[in-house]
Length: 142
Length: 401
Image 1 (cartoon, rainbow over the protein chains, first blue to last red):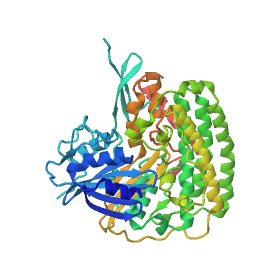
Image 2: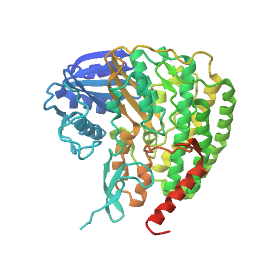
Image 3: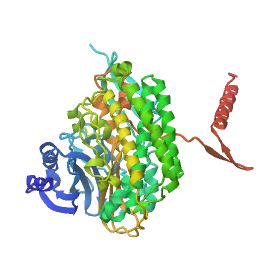
Image 4: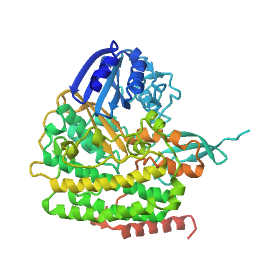
């Protein structure tokens, strides 16, 4: 059984949509409430490596893609979750699962204004200290 | 009762010549905590990329870093090609080989640069001078192929911009012949040197568990026994064709000595890969002119000298990307300094912080200055003279002449 089938089986019931764009790229959507459970399964149980997360401002809401990779097969699983409330977007922090999430969550917080619940040190990473509060550079204008 | 003192390194690093700020919290000589403050060099490239069309973005991302300046455009074109059906489907075979030659040449020059700096950091300036001396012929190879020593502008979606001429192949082979004994010399000079061993062994250790927790990449991960290399795990360029034989170098100790040895051994592998590519370079096209980018998502990653370089592209079918996420390897590696540094002494901190090989830009050796009388080319000595004259003027101004 390939890693893709294992991931699909282990996340049974959590996956809203599953798409293979090519044999090395899988995109799956999960609910934002499930993100910590999903990350735990992928990182701890299946030993996938967390590459990075990318936040995207879309008309449907703020989308976060968590990219996990299996280094044995070179497959990337991009876990997509959508935060519909754009005014006060929030989601659970993944720092409890792996420390590598610390910097990228700080970056998404300042660039897109997503609040990561449970992040130990949510402060600015890249933007200057005098950058105005409440201005998020990667948000799209209406 | 312990007394904590803050030792600031930065915001302009005195040795790495790069804006980053480490606040070391020390008790006596021992580092007990560290605060890493970055962002002084933030240029908003992800945002700028949304306003450029696909061909322009390749030039833009080349400017992210002056050292691994071909890794970002390579990862970017791979991301777009992923969206188009994969690198092998849209890039001619000759271009694949040229891409790999550039990628590996860059690894040699980047590792030599780091090796020189590491030697400089621990006060072994002979290593610094040697490493940079042998780095020069590698930069000359780039100049022969692309016309530039840095920022080669070789990558484009669907191929490469410049070909390697047949008459240049013996020159490149000769350069590899010259670099090989130099690498052997480094191997002996560093791996067998008892002083370097005493200075670097057991210092700045990142354990395998910590390396996995912080998701570090590249030599930083491989020195801690985490067996990852994108060139093997998701092969690209000529390496995807299966015609090139090479090995992934792995060390277990996770200290700075392991990182140094790993980079030296890795350079020898690079020379082997370049030799095979030059030998097997097929004839043919170097570019399939790609015209339209369909809507969709693509991820491209390459093994940059510092580790996995990750680019994510989202297209809506227009000529510009909707979202372009860039993750340089140092983003993961520098964060891990937090654990590698704590518990060591202040004197070890400088080399520990540098052991992950954070990016910084290198200087030009030739400058052209516009004068009313026309263009004038300045060589190295002219620039030194200019600098001396300026120092003299400043001295006179403040009355120290």
